[in-house]
Amino acid sequence: MPKGKSDALNWLRAHVLYEGADCLLWPYSTTRGYAQVPMDGKIAKATRVMCQWAHGDPPTPKHEAAHSCGNRRCVNPSHLSWKTRSENQLDAVAHGTVFRKGNRWNTKLSPTQALEIRSLKGSLSQDKIAARFGVSHSTVAKIHRGELWRE
Image (tube, rainbow, N blue to C red):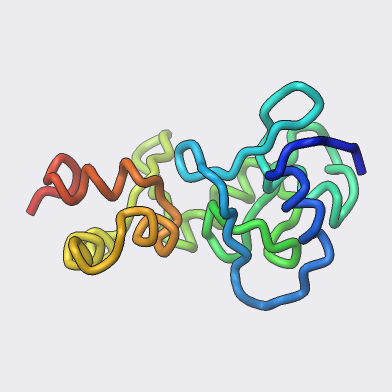
């Protein structure tokens, strides 16, 4: 395991043997819903680092760390595995986190999830709502402002 000085990397290192069944949510900031960690002078996806530490190197450099739970903020080693891009996209469709439109993949919450996010406005912080649905804070804010998922 590479050495690093960041709190985020240390947190990830401390949880590599986590055995809980629930999602292990990344406690630091995310970009586009993905957990990131400084690694070897670059920014890496925390899920990829965790998958590598827990399950070894990917079969090919093109393999992705895929979530069995569908939550992009989850770094639970038992929820991660190496999959091809196609396999990962098919999982995302099954989770309801993306849909296919023609030849393109589009990230999308279900209408029910968007309504629930809207209904939680004022009762939970946007950060807590974002963590619950595995989306970014800005996605929640846009839904609350009516910029996404207008009624």
